[in-house]
Length: 273
Image 1: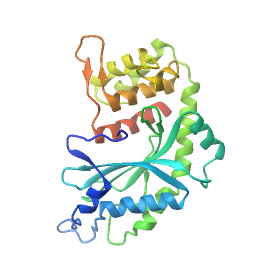
Image 2: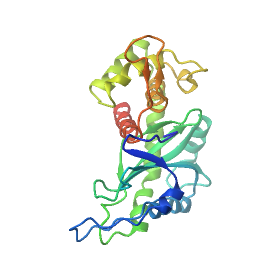
Image 3: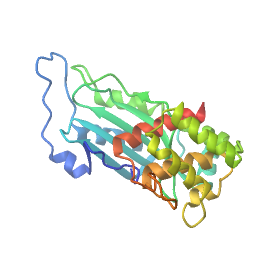
Image 4: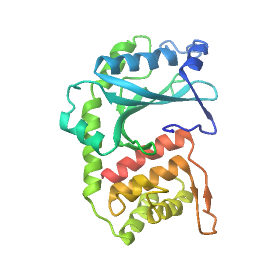
C-alpha cells in the first residue's frame, strides 16, 4: 500500500480494471451465495463516504489472481463536519501531519465477510496505522444482501473507530522509550505479538535506531516513544530495508499487500494493548 502493495497471489489494480471484470457467478451447489461485483461494492463505499462528508483523495485496490478477493484503502479528507468525529480531533490530526483512511477486504468466494478497519496515514511517507479492530459491514454475500444497507452499517461505525485510532496514537506518543526499551518492545512484537515474519525484526530495530530527518522523518521526530517505534515497523513493511550491517537481514524487500494488511492490523493490536 503506497498504502497497498501487491502480494505474490494478488495484483494491484485500479477501478477501470474492476469494471472490466466479468460478473462473478454463485458458487456451485450454493442456494444462497450471491456475489457482488467488486466495482459495485467500491462505488457504494465511496458514495457512502461522500454522503457522510468524506472526500476520497486516493484509492488503492488489489485483487487475488482469481479476482475473487479484494483488498482496498480509501485515503480521506473531512470536507465538512463528520457526525461523531470531534472537530478538535480533525484539526489536531491535520496539524500533526496525518490523514484519515479506511481499509477493507471482501471475498466473492465466501472466504471472508466484507470487513473494514479504521486507520491513519502519515503524510510524509504514507506509513499507516490501523487500530487493529476489524468492523464487519455485514455477513458474507447471500441472497438477501442489500449492498447499500450493508455498507451503511459499517461506515456508521467509522467515526468511533477513527477516534479510537487517534487516541491510540496520542497515547503511544506520550509513552517514552529508551533505546533498550524500544529494542525489547521490538522483540516482544515479533515473539509474542506475531506481527510479521522474524526476518523483519532486525530491520525494524535498525530503522528506529538510525532514523534521521533525511532517511526517516516520520520516525525521527518521535524517536524516543512508542509512536516512533510503530512508524519504524510500518516504514519497513512499506519500503523494505537496506541495512548498513552485513548480515542476513541487510536487504529486506517491502511486504506484500495482503501480508502488510494483516501485519499492520496485528501491529495496531499489539501497540494499543
